[in-house]
Length: 228
Image 1 (cartoon, rainbow, N blue to C red):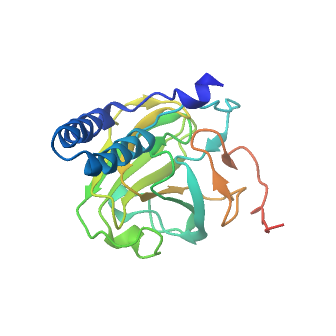
Image 2 (image 1 turned 60 degrees about the vertical axis):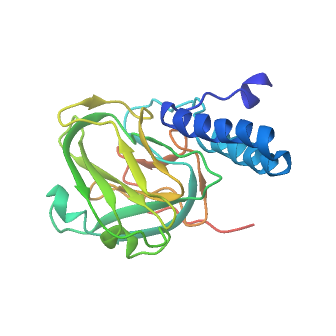
């Protein structure tokens, strides 16, 4: 039970936690009633930057969700132009992260990073479809061992103002590995290889690094879903 409460904190969160904690301490000395607001904000910072361990399915060919959150859309579109992956429409799964979700991003499958592209843009509501083209974002191309390619994109949202991506061109990665985060509220898209359909549906809750988005070794068609 302790592991459920004593969750590790991502290193990017400690400066924010320290600032809020310092201001809260000062308020207790100067104006205690207002200090309780500082306690709430400090607790929220700790909550937001939590970095729990995940149990990653390791069967070859599985693509896992790159983020926690709700699937806002499953559609067929061309991959990001900046990644030079052609114009053929492929399946895209969009995961929307609220401020209450874990914001650590994870690599969807095994492979090698072969392209990185950062785009300065707007900060529209990340749930909007046009956010994938107009918002500030970090796009990544991942090449699998068999030569196929997967793309995933970190998209800043209405509140988010900082994208952190720790990947480097030529880096070998494994499914479920942490690679960055977005502050505070955002969206993460994954573009599947041509001919591969998603096994998830809009409205489904994703667990980053655990929920299987697609089986790259299967020819199963798109899997529908419904609320019950």
